[in-house]
Image (cartoon, rainbow, N blue to C red; front, side, top):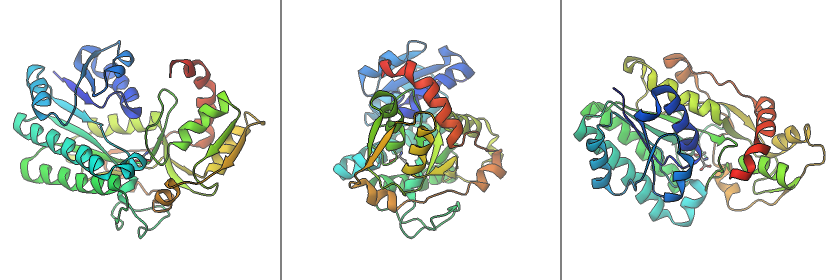
Length: 317
Ligand code: AKB
């Protein structure tokens, strides 16, 4: 029987992925954990425990006591927050992953999921339709930790047979929780401000194109990758996955087609430099060919869905 542990379940991806795992495997099969006790209120449908991935002993005890078979390790410090305290970001992102990989080896876990990011790419990477194996020269501590993490995943697979699988996510956009500390967060916040204030100040320039993905597609990609037979997973660092690519001006126009009075100002800050170092769009042929990946949402479809559903959610956030 599958028994699934989600680490960092209270975050943007965890909030929605945990629900999907509970729908698929049953609520009794899922344990949601987060280092913040306040995340508990999101998980009235499954077990919840506070857990800090940096406490290896506590993670190990939980794995053994509950006979966990799969771990979804989502806890990380993202690109913008990481630049404010690089040592803390490195410690959290690297030591957390190594704890999970070591425990997976020691306890012979069946499968691990760990998200990487387009932040592994850098200013010398081709910007358009960036290929899977493009040159990587990350400039943020977050990107450096994700690139090192990808290689650790491959090492644990090759050396110890740990079945760890990974996706290089672009900016993730959902309406059920707020984003936290990333460079792509503007594309989440803009919908909230469109509903609350009818105006928004964007921290990136209007013509900055970045790869993005709607949360339903991100959850679907994760579920699909984890369900694929091990023999079809040919990339053991992390797969490029693409959803859509747009600029702040384009997302603003997409919102204005529903809310014509919505106004956007631009006040770029330190996150502009991070965004400028990342690809504009991603080539995900390897994920398509190996395990049949294909995104469902483009910008107009995502905007319609978020603007329809967000108003009834906004008071819970
Ligand atoms: C960030 O902006 O740091 C993240 C990411 C692209 O990994 N959303």
